[in-house]
Image (cartoon, rainbow, N blue to C red; front, side, top):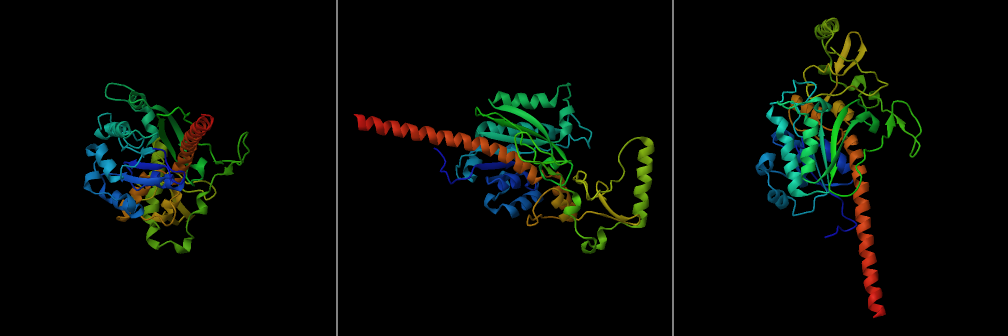
Amino acid sequence: MAKLISEKPTVIDLFCGAGGLSKGFEMAEFEVLLGVDNNPIFMKTFHKNYPNAALNSDYADVRKITRNKIRQKTGNRAIDVVIGGPPCQGFSMAGLRDPNDPRNSLFKEFVRLVHVLEPKWFVMENVVGLLVSKTGSGEDVDTIIQQEFEKIKYKVKRFTLLAADYGVPQKRKRLFYVGTNTDRNITPPPPTHAEYPQGTLHGPRLERWVPVGRVLLPESEVPENYFHSKRMIEGFRRRKERNTNNGKGFGWQILDMNKPSYTISARYWKDGSDALVRYSDERIRMLTERECARIQSFPDDYEFVGSKRQVYTQIGNAVPPLLAKAIALEIKKKLKYDEDMKNSTSYCNRSLMNLETVVS
């Protein structure tokens, strides 16, 4: 049955975490029907921001979810897009990329649900380290993932996108597998920003990357417990020198207020060394939770549930909503084209039927 013109396209989010992907699709005017994650704290955050996509224990473990359960929960609504980011610690450049890590196989659950739900499109997000990951038998994980989607009759392409190119004040790269069972072409979202402002041949002028200084709090508004002690600062300096001499690691990273932030990781809660703010040699601090959320492009009214550590972890694991929005808008254009063509064909058929009735 065709959608009413006023209806929004629909999306469900597997391995939703705190909801970064969902927020981006919501920004692009998709209706979020459901979120799924087995982490109870993540689900509390997701539910806080998407109360209409309420979940319970039946929807916590993606391995136990069936098509019928999802249909029941979503009121048997048609699902246009399935999105999600299967746990990627086994693929991460920050980890050991263990080929035997059971989390590495969870993408097959994503494939299974795409197969049974038959959305027009899917978006699966992961870390760029996946591109160099191999199975225990030496096979490329990237190749296997694409083959699994092709087996269920979906065209698929992968894109490595830089968040800063889409208005996110952060130089964060993420990998996206985008697929469809329609005859539409799969194309990456066009960048809206660049390191240096420039014109484009077929679109509007690109804006300059958003600098991190634009989203940070004034020094006077930051609580003192976010500032590091002299002892901690000296420890950072020694570690930086040691890592430099050993040719590994990055030690600490000081933010340039005129450039996007370094990547905010899920381990930011430890000491904030991924991205520190320096006012002087002796006055250095880590970012607050809200500043990290802003760097990830979450709006200020987005609520996070949990302890300080849990909130930092959720934010660091999330897909930047503005990056997700760009992908959503690109898919939405294809969905709208299909819907317009369907409505146009239906109109032409009705007109022909009316003409035949008049002639007869």
